Structure formats: C-alpha cells, structure tokens
Image (cartoon, rainbow, N blue to C red; front, side):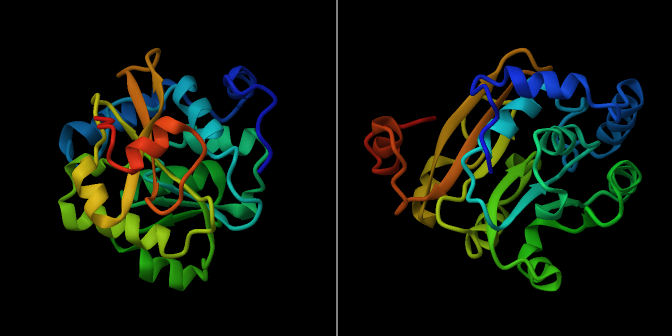
Length: 233
C-alpha cells in the first residue's frame, strides 16, 4: 500500500472531511445506545474521530502490497471510510463486526460484500471460510481490553498465523498502557509499542501495534521493547 502524501496525517484528514457517508449524530446515537446496554461488547460510546481514522490509515501505510487488510470491530465505519478514501482497493478489505445492528449499518453504508458478521475470537474458521490465506495488516477497535487472556491470544494467533512478512496488528485503546499486557505478549511471542497518541479524539485514544517478537522492525526503541530492555507500558 502506498503511504499517504503526508506522514503526519494531514492529507488523510482532508480525505476524511470529504467523505460524504459520514452520518455524524445518527452514528453517535447508535453507538451511545448500544454502549449503554452492552458496555463490555462496545468499545466506546462515540465513533472514532478524524484523527484516529487518519492514524489508522498511517498505521497500514507500510503494509505489504499483497494480502487482505482486516478491520476488526468496525462499529459505524469511520475507519473503514478513511481507509477507502486513502485509496485502498475495496477488494483488499475485509470488515468484521460481531454486533448484528452495527453489521447491518455497515452493510448499508459500504455494501454486503465488504462486511462480515463474525466473532473476532474465532477468526481461524472465518478466514478459512472466506479463503483469506494472507493477511497484510489488521486494524482493530475491538474492546480487547475486556477479553480474557485466552481470547486475546486467539485473536492475535489467528491473525498472525496467516500474516504476510511485515504485517502488523494495530489496536486502539482509551487507557495509557497496552490493552494486552506486555508480559502476556512476551510469553506468547509478540511485542508491542505505542504507535500514536490521538489527544484530539473524544475520548482521547492511543494506537498500539503488535507483531511477532522475531520480527525486528527499524528503530532502537522498538527493538529494546521487543528484547525486554524497555517497559513500554
């Protein structure tokens, strides 16, 4: 995938402003209603803002040129819209949403072919059914903080079992530290680093990137985190 013209996300933000499908208040009310009744299944009460969506676009800019880009827990679709606006071919996208009402909303907005209703904690069978054998990148707004450790590992393992070299898993959180604890990541063979803090989102958000520990990306700090010499929490 080609990197957006500006690495600071400004061009991606301009793309977001021009997205005609953004529904604003109706999306907010839908998420707010679902969050009130299912707070552990719905990650947040507000759709991701333009800054978060632009950060996700930047997070997949270095993804391998072949393979599927998977979005987990797409909600009302602001990140999906940003990825499409950035020029990613819709045939490369697979949008996964477990909630029936949100999945229906996404299908109306982006088309039935792009959106699948599935549980992110059982992705292996889903990938098999969809014939997805190469994952280029994963972006996630799942409430993974509320998953048990077994479920957290299942999500990561199923994605990285089919990951192309250089693929990353980018996860949003609204707390300071990694939503998957660093010592658990290390014990499972992964490492994680903060990718970007988005202070102008409400609530303020941080994107974390996970990848196998045996993949040593450029950057001394990231390498130190992977080797356990730094605690990035």
